[in-house]
Image 1 (cartoon, helix red, strand yellow):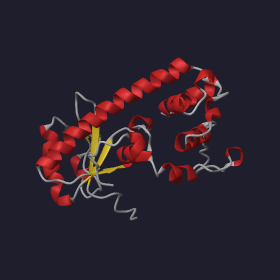
Image 2 (tube, helix red, strand yellow):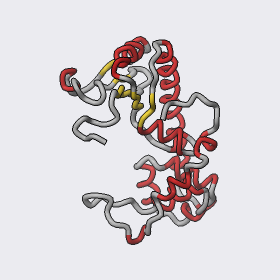
Image 3 (cartoon, helix red, strand yellow):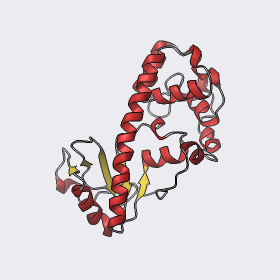
Length: 219
């Protein structure tokens, strides 16, 4: 949805939505089918997400093998593991606690950088009367997760009206962002987002969308 500048906490923003999220994970982990084309949910993921979304299930962290913990951390779930262990239960039995804690601190720092950049971009957008809708990672993190850093994301996806795209992109350039891609500028013509922007010092990437999805995949 449209970005909310309210000061509510992440937990307050998540209230009322965790029940809906938890429905996604009410499956039998031992007999689950592949999600698609042979890709399976790694062991330990579903109990962990259930515990995150419901606030119950402290045993989700108990008995996890070091190899499973390493797998979860590599998939960006270290912060979720740390959150569940600390707030739901099981921290005293968590193996590789230092590794998990380091992953959590790293995610906090990286997420803070991204949302600091996002705050600057939204302020700049207001200056040119450009309404911005957050998509994908940022929208999901701010709406459904107890804390934004629990939802890993590689970039920021912003949706704007097509007639305001140039105005917003001009403000991005003024903030120091530059467009970068292996593809040519022409290859992005007619696509649902323009060539990605990257800030050379902050290392933050932004995609400016004028459509939610590619034209060849209508919703």
